[in-house]
Length: 466
Image (cartoon, rainbow, N blue to C red):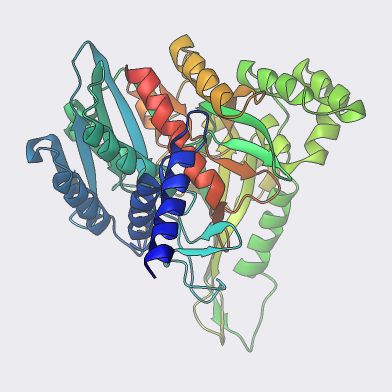
């Protein structure tokens, strides 16, 4: 028994030593265990932006920070509502430079237990993956920020500038409880920074091969519309030709046929040029031609990949339906939610007008489901940020390029950019480009990639704030 115990200790020591060696892509085992415990706690808080709450998760983060020795005066827990609180902490540096903001959101999109194979709010590890709602969007980076800040404090590291970390509410909803908007309005001093590192730029891989590490510098605008038809209704035993559901269905069909013209900007031109270096033959030639604005190549590339199509044009898609009030009554109303992702250089008002023209029916009301969104500028290509991303990427995954991107979705970076805080989406988390499950069923990320992202963000922050 004594001999077996010694052997186990020897194996553990060897494993720790191997993990801690320079050039390894993961943190030591005890840091990984701390991160996993935080991650499990994060995922198992139901923070769904419509049916859940973020306050319990925010308070749990604050407790871990206090337990790690962060002064209570440097930790703020507050928000737009009692159930929608945020947590902000300041890690004190020398003050030689203006702070860097490390941002992650606590809320997640809805996940119905009946749709999932397993409970979406229980972290499950299986087959080399972590499963659960928010495992990728955005509780991986949220957990890593917390674990790494605690580790920095354990080390006694004194950066050249303060680090501010903020875990916020309702990024997915962008409504009245949105944490970043509330903080900018009520407590800008808590999060004011030279720039922000956020989600939105991940690593792309295919069949296990790492293709590129992306830095998000701009994003599409999130614009949601409601299309609605109203009728007097009546008894279902006496149907009439004019039916709210039928008229709405015709409008939805017209929306499904809409295609906005492709438009390139400096970021997407650079992206497609970089992508051309990863392929051979006709696909390589087409990607290079896209970067130069070739219409025929753009059509082929858009048809090749839904992701590439979304980078090339504004898109609108029906996402939610409602209609009728009783099974034995003619519908008095029918509605559909249409979510549009608008290119940075395209006015939202022009998209609304395009919807109206395509539907061409005055009986179909078209209006904003939420208030008209504000569009944000692209972040400048800061050489210190880009160089740090390239340096850390090269040290971990030699030969993998760092590529600036325009993300097809939206993040809280839009609010920060509009407030004069440039924001860069850098995660260091590699995802299979053919199996992206954010917002979808059985959301998952790779276990190996998760722990590599911990190491990547540890090195990146140390380089940026030294």
